[in-house]
Length: 141
Image (cartoon, rainbow, N blue to C red):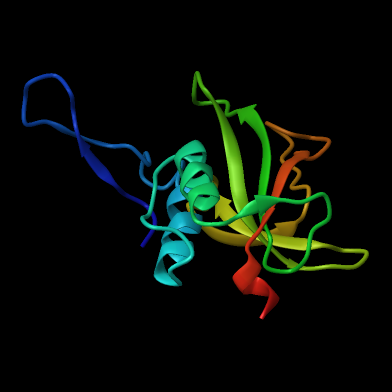
């Protein structure tokens, strides 16, 4: 469901690109689709930055501590097959000694539950550090 998003090239032709690269880059699409479905943002997005911009426009704010339901953004990393660095975005789903999150995995090309600081031997052997945590007042209810 979150593997493809086609965008028309800006080259004067009718060609389109799969900007999610067959699911490798689907994190923002996954998170923003869920938030949009629950009317917590206006639209789904294909980038983390545009998702954050829509979140802030719709009352999301940064906080220092995380709670289940928080939207978490991790530092950018460079994937082996790509020249660009990419941020990761997902949801914190539980707390405790083994805090877990769910985000879109570039390996499995699907949502995946993982430790809050995901480890990937190729791109982040020490784990990806959290750079932002977002909360929305509607989640207090």
